[in-house]
Length: 180
Image (cartoon, rainbow, N blue to C red; front, side, top):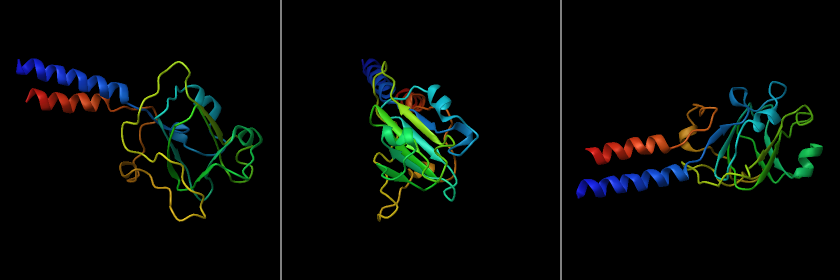
């Protein structure tokens, strides 16, 4: 009976972990957030984004930044009143709404293609993040609080460019706990 209870608990926990896993996407994959070397429209078209997924913008902060803007500002590359400004060079943003629009605020970068439209897939259910991440937009540079990436991403290691989930890790940990 004890083995059956352990097996049921393992099954339930694995199911919960599988449903709550979120993906992590490095914007632009290995190229990152820059001008001229990537089509962000094509990059986003190959992804299936969900609420709770995490975007990582990696770039040289001396030459780029990330502005979250409205649809109209995105279309016209208007940098005058962003909803949020990110400037660390390694910004982590959690997808919360159906649509997010990001542009670079440096002169002409947006018009040269440094902008991305992130749209949540209509057909898939939302899920929660698999690890703690910055879930609110960073304040504008004039404010006191800096944008800080999660500790596990501050050591310079980039996450995989494809999404990853905690499902496999959770199964391994649970398996080792219940089998032993």
